[in-house]
Image (cartoon, rainbow, N blue to C red; front, side):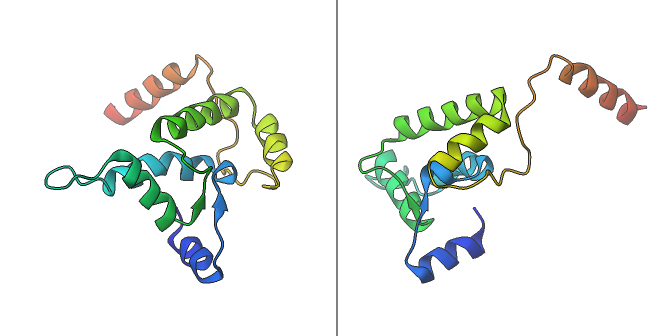
Length: 126
C-alpha cells in the first residue's frame, strides 16, 4: 500500500475498489489486518481489524466482507494471475479498473523454478 496514494485518496474523499487493487497490495492486506488486531488485552475481532484496515487504507469493499471472503478473493486472484496475466487485465478492464498495474505480470508456475533456484544457490555458496 503506497502511503502517498492512501493520503491522496483520504484527501480526495475517495476509495480504491478492492477488486482493482494490485496483487502486491492485496497480499499486503492480511498483514495490515494482523497489525490492527489487538489480542493481548482487547476484545477486538478479526472482522473489526479487517474493517479498520480497509477504512484506514481507503479501500472500498462489499458491505460485510468477512476475512474468509477476503482470503477467498485473494486466492482466486492469485490463481487467475497464475494462469495468465492477459486474462487478469481483461477482467480488471471489465470492472472499470483499467489495465493491470502489477509490475510482475503473470505468475510463472513452471517446474523449472527449482532448478533455477538450485543454480543460484550453488553460485552463491561457491
